[in-house]
Length: 216
Image (tube, rainbow, N blue to C red; front, side, top):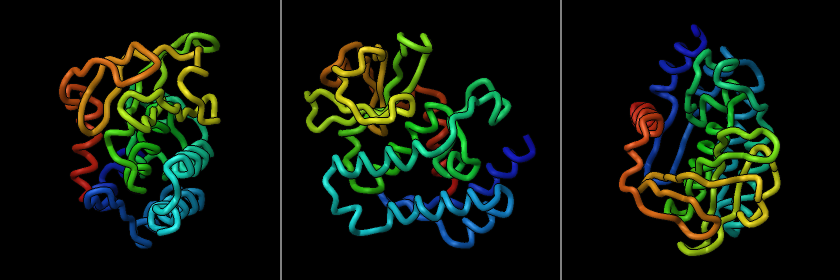
């Protein structure tokens, strides 16, 4: 818990957001690496390189999905109880990468913000709460990408690490989805589902965004 408290205070000066841009300085990476070790420096440096490389912004959106999905899925899965000492905690991308661990929410959130930094529009991305029914039979979270509003989404997941169309993921039953713009009921495999207003209704999401805004 002391580690968590230190990290949260450090993050107040770690992230800077300007539209889709995300920046983290060498000094900030070094400070985080002092607490969390060489893996934090490596992961944060590589993450920054992904977002700052003009060649990556010029990739097709499918290539961006592959790049980000593969990079984030290198992070070990750790439950919130094991990693943060809490039943449910949604980590920022810096927290996720610095501590080299997280659960399904953290994978999905980190992928979402990184793809936004690479120029993928908010209305094409939805963090999606699902139930996994074939192996774990429990709640799970993935990131869905919609090429068009009514398209079948592609699913970015930390369980099945290959990007698949939703119709190939019969193990997942969608419940609701959200992004920076809204909240949707998503009890279907294609299209966005029924709009339910602002995503600020989700307490953990609102808290996460407030923490990230406080870091600017």
